[in-house]
Image (cartoon, one colour):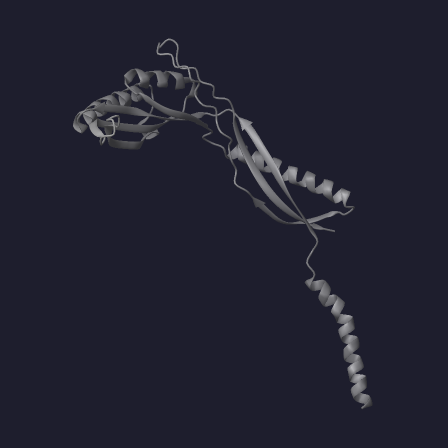
Length: 235
């Protein structure tokens, strides 16, 4: 009986001694998690233009023939302006009927067809962009659906934005740590969010057809932004 009580007492003491250690091993670390934002602004070096031709005729084949001739003239104008073949890609081609719906309650009547053909063009010399737009309009393009500006080699700027994002996250973390009277420990994790560029400047609305006065273009600046989330251990 005495031996059993002694063994039980020894086991209880062992559990009492080891339980805090085990609890410490399994305790979740105290952490602080902050996000950081970094961005770099720079001038774009490429313009992406969507342009094309829409042609109408009573017969589909006539609309197609007119559209084909106009698009061939547009392609020739692009080549003459120094645009390489690799920088021109067809983005849309469509043939659709046209109806007259003003028949005083009667069924719509077919009045012809419309053929539209659009291409996406990369203009890599921005100082020629106004002249390129003039040339394609003069050659027969009657659809310019917008211009987007881009940076062809963004890696260096994005890396700088990443550094700024990490510095921003650390600055915030140090403020919170000081306010809470704790110290930052080791970094436990770093994750990057998707980087983005805000909407880019578009072509100004005024188009001048005189070749001596090209279309005015405002290229503005491109903003490359990166967000990161960092988790620190709290000491």
